[in-house]
Image (cartoon, rainbow, N blue to C red; front, side):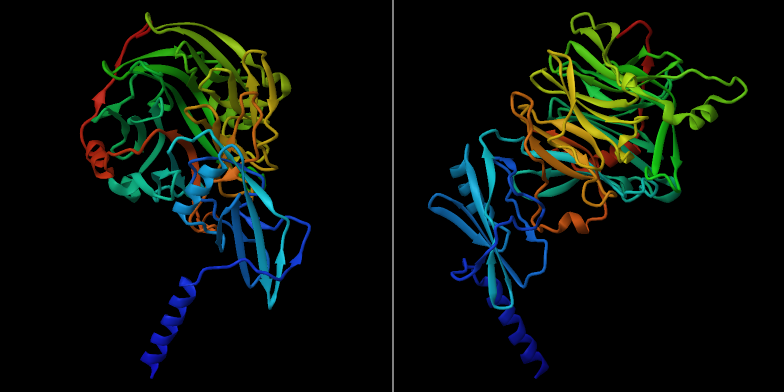
Length: 497
């Protein structure tokens, strides 16, 4: 009897799952937008984005959503089928999808005020990659670099932190980066056990030991030149603080930091900026390959009796980073002197992570009160500078009351993706926004998931989201074999590469 009852129960569930939702014919009308998660009301999306699934974020026994464009529609529970969504998005291109939400409590239905999902004809790069890490930034063994197709929900691992070591022989992988969005030309770092910099270039892989007596440390925060086999890095001596009462739970600061250049073909390195009174970090190339941007904070010791690290630790809130740039001649590989681009210190603030739009017009950066580890600073916001006029403004269209940090431009310059702690203040999640030619942005939308509640249940932070023109096809195990092997030592040269 128990077996028959269980079978009957399964059949009922199957029939319920196969049933198609329908739009209620009798309902009461509410003149307000529905509370949904994620919040996709009035957002602008690329024509090739995956379906925007959502759920009703209130008390209801049932929800039905209708997505419509002219005479074509999708009626579902908030999870549109991919095939039908693509057809609807193509029809709405340059216009909007109208969304109606109905909820049922008991026997009565309620219809909320409809909203629009605007569909831009501007497409988006089909892939992104990011690091997934626990929010504490302390336990990092369960850490991966993943890639996700934006046109559907497919996700896979590029590299897993535990493929080479565990616990005492553990690694910390970080700083994945690509040359011009090309997934066949990438690099990432592995710190600690069997550490090194992994560089993949058109199918060829090598592990590089970036440490050298003439430079400060191995390279971090890479910036690959748009076409030359030249990567610029920051080198640093980094320390951490963990607060007990400060709302910014984690603080990362440098005792020293410089800028170096590395030649992928010759394995030569050289110093570009290494002043003892400047902390240089976050290099970024302009798309024309003729200008290098970076950030730098001025610091002078006041107490000669203290070790430098002790004094920096006491004064870390005094570190204010400005944005600079250096001209570069791709033919001679010579850099010019530094030039101030944005004086954040004059505003009693700190500017970090400069990224230049593909058309060279806009500079997007993060600004907070102090320091450069803005991913844990709740006051951090995105700012946008028009490089032609020199006018910078808070990017209010995309900012929230909480942290906005790492950000990247799409290859066509019409979209940005960034990490934000909006929602709960603890987990960074990826948000995407359209940026028009005049620099005005649309309302950001959260990275779509098949399960609309996925991000609220996922206990990982998204770190450094980067756009890609396709997937990385190298298997994680191949990266692991390279990391377990011998490294190529860099050779230091002075005066440039």
